Image 1: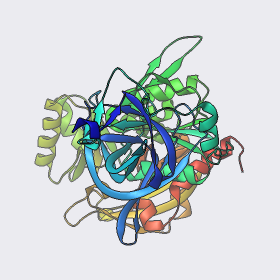
Image 2: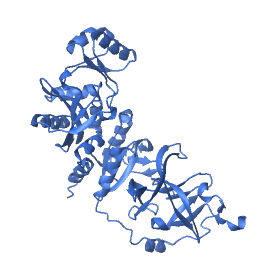
Image 3: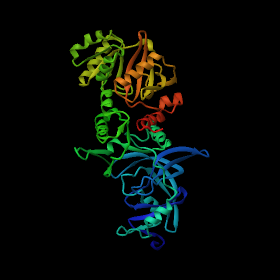
Image 4: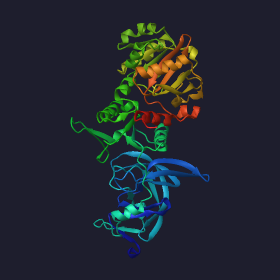
Length: 456
């Protein structure tokens, strides 16, 4: 039986005819269950009423200039745990693998393997019944010379006119992150998704560095787009600050993001700039509860956790007794809170203005679900196009400038005393506003970076 099987070493060169990949070096690993192929700019699409996925691959290790554009039938999406314990959701494709003179279909997951030593990992499921592995040997089926590789990929060199842009975020599957990656690629830039938790840094006066999983140094970026979730603000801003120390342009600065995440401090900055907000109180002692409630005009009122986001940690207290209970409950947890007057006439609606580079590029009205007062899209709120007034635009632009942000989602509420500013978000979501307005907001963010480099 064994003489019918192919004998492979621990490293071999293979090809994928259906993907247009003439040769690629693979790590042959019987300890790994599934096979994995390096891929970037991964995007699912429909072809002949079937699910497909398109992606780009740099088939030669440490060569970002050579790129192959691929597409394949989509078989599945599954959670894969790497050898380092990192879990991610990956697309799974099926295509023909060719090794030597043999060819057969295999399933592979798609993932960015920039930090790995091999663009391809051949796992035991793909080898079962067909392959024997001699781990002491390498390239038993031969390997291409440098000249051969150059000839095979001579038509796959991509232009280098674009910028090298990193998206510093946590979830590559998030709509906003996928759109930004897509928009940058569409405009000819080299886009890289940088998972915040996979980055670490070297603090040194002469040679500061940022490293990525596997030891790859991330010092050669032109620009970084920080998209930092609130739970990782401290570390995400520290990384952004390190990129700034390396003279990398950051679309939002570390300082601007830090102060925007401090709800109390940001409100103080906005008030200092002459921007009206709902009457707000802040205290640190349960003994102040009664006067705190009176300070904002009594009930009903809003109680907010300082660290809350996307409508989480926001409670409507409709009576004085309810307000006292909520405030004291929050304080018993030793968390910082704000209390704020409830704008009843808003009827569960607010306005989100998306500001980029000092201009309101889009605006929507968000409306809460029935029985809900928070209009956040994440909480089931709906979005619709709205024409904002000149005053509302002025407030949005002024608030963004006061926070020193280049990109911001500014939330405004319409009250009996005029428009009032609720919040300034330094990592605003794109799905609701792009879906409602059909505007390419992600593209506008890339254009803002190009303007900094004076690219047309």
